[in-house]
Length: 586
Image 1 (tube, rainbow, N blue to C red):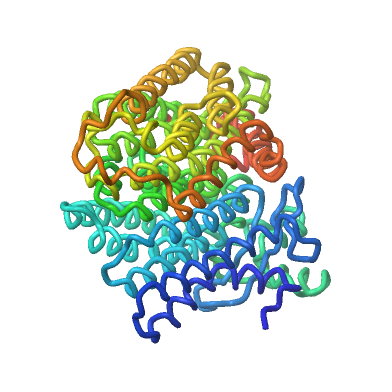
Image 2: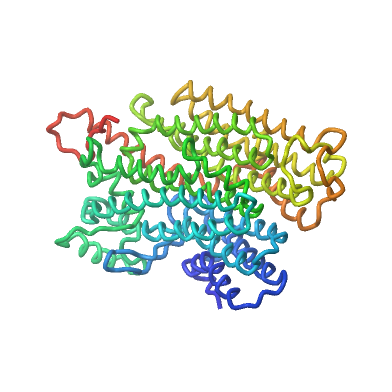
């Protein structure tokens, strides 16, 4: 019996239920659609569990308006290296967990056309879902990396076995890009681990340190204090993979600011290595080239997962790990990050305009839209010149978070709608479509609504995040703000041109016109909820911001406080002793 009254057990079941179901399916006989029905049922249960955390009333309920971690749970995993099974949720991770469960359920529903090796497909799909959920719940860096790697092999095989004509090429390209990013991440993780020391947190309030989960959370206050004293009095360095503890070290100690190679600090190199790994996943220019090939060759459900969830892991890593742990590097490289975001926006939009393949156009639109996420995260507008006013950076960070959720709704919808017509006519040539409104009116109406959400039309979900990001950039760089605002014109151009070529016109120009049959009930049940959410979050963004904004604002305020200390230290004489060292020229 599931112990739903225990939040920690609840989250563990939420993460590992798909993997457990995959194990069960491995011993079941392959019987037509039965395995897909079981897999869909499991993904639906996981989604309902995530929804229960919103609307439930028990201890498992996730409370809106709270800025700290909720439902934290820690047990020793590999004690010799101080590695723990540490999980928890806050306003940054919880919306992404719900999005993951939702998109996974819809993608499994879109998997009915898969007829080859159905057992293997269902097993890999469920393992992939466990990996994705685990990434957003993990608060131990080692555990985070394990879940990150768990996603790699299932996605490789899902593309390489069930993909299109060039599936092997796309799968290997995806694998190599992601593996390079993973190796760089691992190097950075080890750098931070071996330079970390829990004893350096002795000057901080005990409750602030306890809240990171470095001691047993189930102990009473006195026992927690004793456990902390044992850590502080240890003779050897107390290394840790605890992400929350590493954040405190990055912001309140000089453990990661010591000069390292070529005149840069350890955290500068850690930020660069982690940033490359996360930007590959976003993906941003110039490390984006794996995405169009992976999307074009992947089956429709896997394209939905790629666009709806996997790309968000890059933005999540930047927000959860890079900036809080390596604030000095984030401060020094802020303009570089913003420039990467703007270049990705412009390049992705122009590349989308040049496409004749319907699916490749949607793939490049993801590169452009995720550029807003990178830009919003990079706008470090709280510094001395702005009197350390964090309001614009809060707007950018919240805009980036909102954009991740909005893109996680509209982009899977666009890929699914492309897949619907591809399953019927077996081509994606935009120049051979036309007249679909007359043949498939319900499908075309929903498609236009979801594509308008991707365009950023006011009243739909894509508008809010983009506007927040553009407004936040104005106070940082007028030039970047003007360019990012102008990208909206390019987005409208390729979206409207695609709608005109596919859905408008008097007649269908391509082959297999007789196969253009109306929406099935299954297809409608997948597309309609995506359109409904796109409209709901467009007219009621507060319902989402209530969950994410407190945690995002807390992160910005903490980094703003670091900036004040940082710049104050930089203006002191060189002989002055400070806990935060001056920035290195970059």
